[in-house]
Image (cartoon, rainbow, N blue to C red):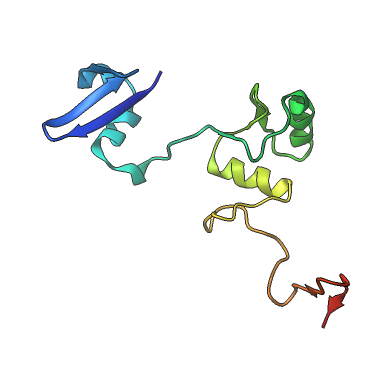
Length: 133
């Protein structure tokens, strides 16, 4: 089921599965929607759980990948398409770091590349592959 608010010149329109409904019917009992409706997006975290293609596996490997994630200390489920189901931003960070991955567009609280500082980075010759000083 998809729900959204459309802002028009004459006011807000509440839609459930593309059908216009009353505000009360759209809100239901979920208090999160009240915050979304008010426009105060910074007070809650939305979009979780998140299904990640980038952190996913082939669907046939989902059971193995789940067992491996448990062994790494970050249990991560996979959906029928093999996408990793990340429960929160913290879970995403922990799973990425456990697998040696990071988000190039991530912020301060997201997984960061490890051991890659300008002092430690070696420049390699593109022709020989040898470390240059």
